[in-house]
Length: 184
Image (tube, rainbow, N blue to C red; front, side, top):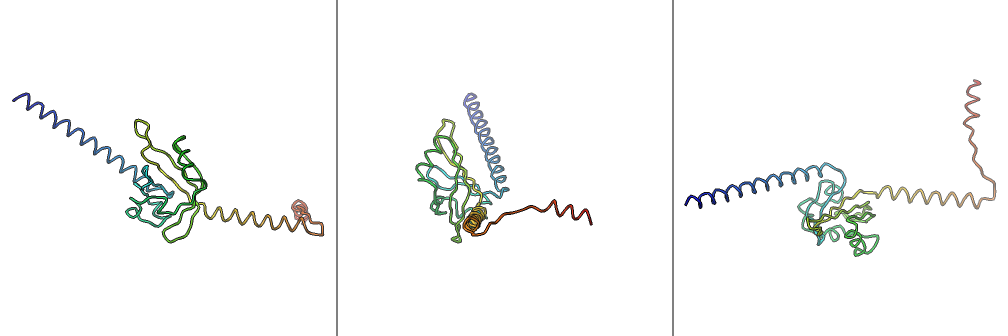
């Protein structure tokens, strides 16, 4: 009877220890998730079937879906992702190197499209098997638009200068102006 009692107490002690350890791990995970909510970048995690398992505040703000609406959805279907290469090729690189970077086009909840600089990191278990992918995105839509406008403007003026019948050049008279200002 004494041995059974000691075995029972040992089992209760071990169970209590494991439960407390699990609670401690859960608290650490919740704290890390709260930290990810501080960033303005979008951060979300998807399982190996591309189902969203975590969605931060930055993702809510950029894409328009609340956390509870996004979790459980297939990310590429939810945001109607346009990839720069076939998804199979991107996934192969992710599995081979553990990461992938590139630009994606996503559709927000309101239907507007955004271009994002995307970084994927593969999470693996202790045996090295892939279990999840963390995706972080930064909206580069305005930068891409400004770059396109600049290229268009440069092309337009280059064409004008190359086809003009008169000679055009640019001079810097700032030193002359400074000398005249000194004479005054």
